[in-house]
Image (cartoon, rainbow, N blue to C red; front, top):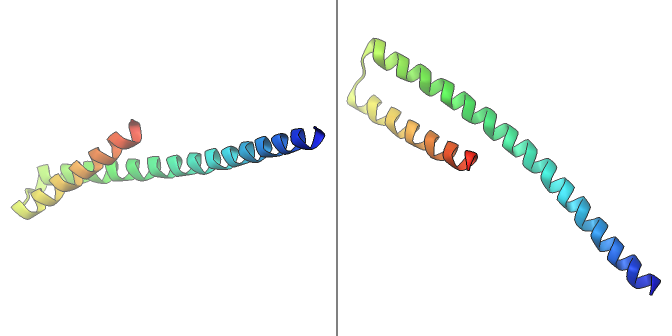
Length: 80
C-alpha cells in the first residue's frame, strides 16, 4: 500500500516539475516574441513614415504591405 502511494506521489511530483519547467520556458518564449513584435512594429512605423516623406516605388510598396500583413498575422496569434 505504501509503495502504491509512493509511486502516485512520485508521478504527481514529476508532472508538477514538468509543468513548472514548461511554464518557465513559455514565459521566456512569450517575452522574446513580444520584444520581437515590438521591434518589428517600430521598424514598420519608421518605414511608413519614410514612405510619406520620400515617396516610394511599386516594389517597395508591395514589400511594405506584405511585411505589415505578416506582422498583423503574427500579432493576432500572439494576442489570442
